[in-house]
Length: 131
Image (cartoon, rainbow, N blue to C red; front, top):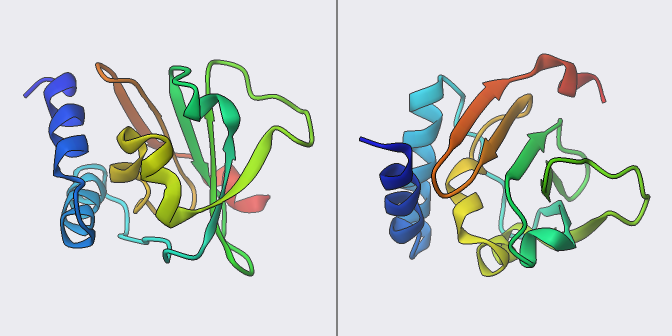
């Protein structure tokens, strides 16, 4: 199955909490990650350009602390060093910003992804756990 069909199917299946969990578990299984979903009230760090449709979509998960998920998500090819680049957003609202992201957010700390509607790259980056 093509990456485009996988991403499109994943985005369409993300309609309720039960379906979200099923889709996230499939992504984790495909890449060998532990299933480690955030709670609805955990915050992600997300850049405004994600909501504006910038591609590719990047995600990097570090170890969660306090009420955070450990996820940092941004659009585009450049990760800004601006301290205001990432906005706090509850995990439960990520799908309203960009539904294509939701299937990947069950990946455990240390995992990263780079996706578009037609491309998917997911890998483990243990260096992220040191941050």
